[in-house]
Image (cartoon, rainbow, N blue to C red; front, side, top):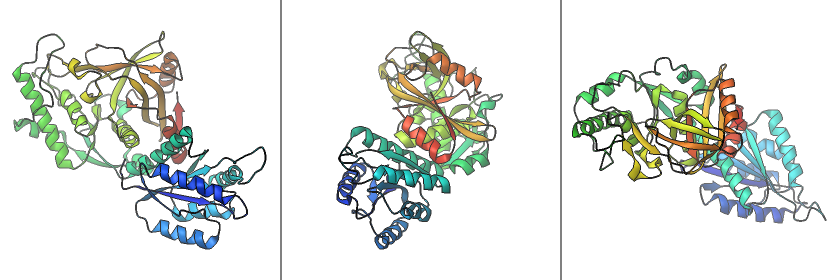
Length: 438
């Protein structure tokens, strides 16, 4: 997440409600958000129009402001939430607060004020979401930060350029994309790089030292020096083209033109090394998968795993994930990373942990979102490539398979570590895209 994004925070209310308690919540919220972002906004609850107008003008002078946390300190003047949202033209997170003692007195009426506000912003079709609760509670803290991250990730996506090297792999219709739809929905701009640039860089013969010291083979023994040299030649060629572009987001048609079965090595290991160098790469020319990678990376700052779902097990509700080009940093044990003797495949088991499978999909002229919640289980897998067993926590694995086949989802999914369900719900709310959360 880009640290130059500023989070706007403002508390609104009326002076004849308990605005002093509201200001305590405002202070606690500011302390929470400042741990991760630069926070800008008044430090007192706004209860009059003049102070409100001054605050809005100050917000407008902040060029990096990306989101407004609109705290309903007390029940507000009904015009105030709309005025803030209309004039600032930024996504709004409405935060309502609990009553100090609801059984004895309604002293703030914040929840009702949030209800008024969400109705108004929904009716006017202004982008917003909401959260309720005490900012000192852990669940509220995580929920608020997740919503802020979701907004900032969309903002980062809007500033992105994606380079497509070549085109999609032949017959891979799920890797099709619509450049104008992508620009209109997410603000992502496209550049194009000819495959010939990769070939020319490779023909130069230059090499780049691989970020590993040994190359143990899946079949036993070690790779030959000839294979290692060619891997490092691919690494240098791709690095050169990537660096020249000035971008960090790519989709690449890595076969068949760049695939030579007779050669002593291929470029797939280099794809993994480059991901650990900070590049996001969608193999097989899958542009929308690369966009999913960018979105998830903006949410987590983590390294993605590009995956096929190649099987499932009903007994433990797990999906079998598998693909080439995985980043070695995702391996459970670096000492167990093995290379195919042909110089193309890299085998390892994904590290265990809570995770989310994501996909920005394209269907009937628009985008849709998919999220599958679960975890990579601590279980070795040896299937010739990087992979892992993904236990689905909310929906039985067999039902997940039925859904993705029945509804025609693309066959590539992106794994990020962590539960991103709240972030995906927020993104769906703000973009108006449908979300399937399994």
